[in-house]
Length: 113
Image 1 (cartoon, rainbow, N blue to C red):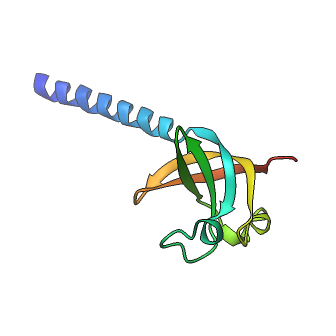
Image 2: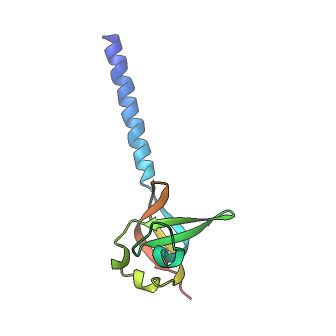
């Protein structure tokens, strides 16, 4: 009985910790950098259709976050397609898949000039 109770407590602690980690992963962040069409501006390998992205500075290097959105169907895509790049900010939830950085945007804003 004591062993069963110990296993139950350990399992519950594991579930609580896992839920806390998942909640932390879904935190929204704001990235500031250059918003662009990955197909047109980056000539990125494997990008065969218009895809929105933001390039941000991280120390001495640049990091690209691909948008997890509708690509060229988004209202803001026309402003950057064809190689145009605009400074701006993207707010959303960041994730990583297949070695690439992604952001699920909830807000995209171009810098005012």
